[in-house]
Length: 271
Length: 198
Image (cartoon, rainbow over all chains, first blue to last red; front, side, top):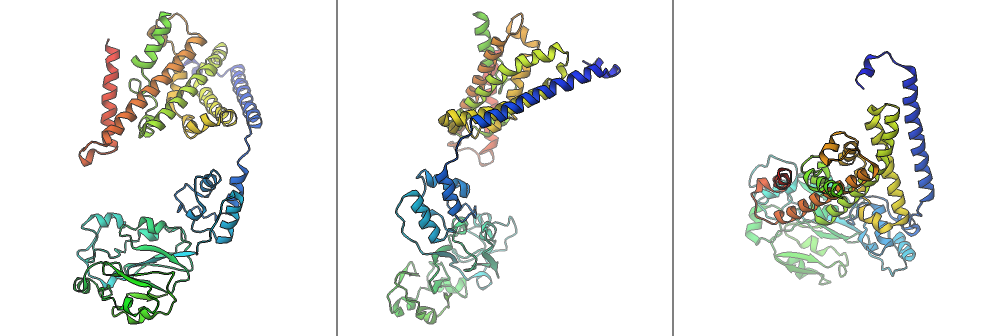
């Protein structure tokens, strides 16, 4: 075999080599074509029909590998339509119709960040390191003095497939118009500051601290001090105080915005 | 009969593909995180190895008659790749359960060096002295492929079982995950080396 390179090239050998390799490749390619024709499997039509109706964002918010995978799981009854955020309600109703399952419309939601700290709140230390909130949270719970403050490293910004959430002045803000409620930011925030609320809501609480009044005043210029004025003044009784924080029940909220006006720290924000 | 037993023991233990010959290390370390997927990978590799031996051995005979044995690697790679494609399609049609069990591992096997390794090994002349046989024939080649695959399965299942156990131990932080897997693999390899010493 080593001699082959030294010998003058024999045209006959070359021809035989080319011929044999060509014959083998033609045989195998024909076999592949034949097998693929014989063994063509019909893809699940139901899954395809469901996939057509999905939003097609491939955001992965449902926990599956993409819209195709989610559609497959739906058609096999392993998933629920409500797990998808971006798909509009009419399409969800149609999907439920295809699958033959009952469907109750859920209101379109969007993400809000329960923090307005950023440059308004004090830092414990300067953070220089990996640009990820998760890494920063490992060092004494992040650089903010407030234990529940947004660290502003922008993990939510990077995971958002719609560019709907942005860090401005050290704190993340969600854009209502762009948000499709896939819930990736909710899952990835180490401080659990992001929440999905109904699109029709008029106010939200822009603070998550459970610190008592004085501590909160010390930490941040816009932190909730747990005074409870919003809960006392709400005409609908939609606000309750839990752990020094107001919690708004959006099913009762009428959108009068009294709470936002009464809040001495301006941490209930109008939308 | 003695020869068949020798082939089985040699392929599975003494010359185990992963821990003695160091072929197919990537799935050995990559797919051994849990036992279920390790077993699926092992069975898929066994299946492809057996069929690859069955096809490539006669083709090598053909190459030999025209004295172009130097083409073996090109032809074998190409045969294995198309074979895996065909097996995948056939399985999808006739045995969806089997396809679901090893479906995602089949495309990975296309480029697995253990499969090409077994095809190269059964046509090698060295193997005749190892197995103490006069000439290699198709039956022996297929048998060798089958038990080499089972040896691979054995090694990867042992590895995954150990890794599952080791992950629950309080190990030093710096050793967690991949480093401890390498150390585990080292101990498995040492255990298998004993077979060669007997």
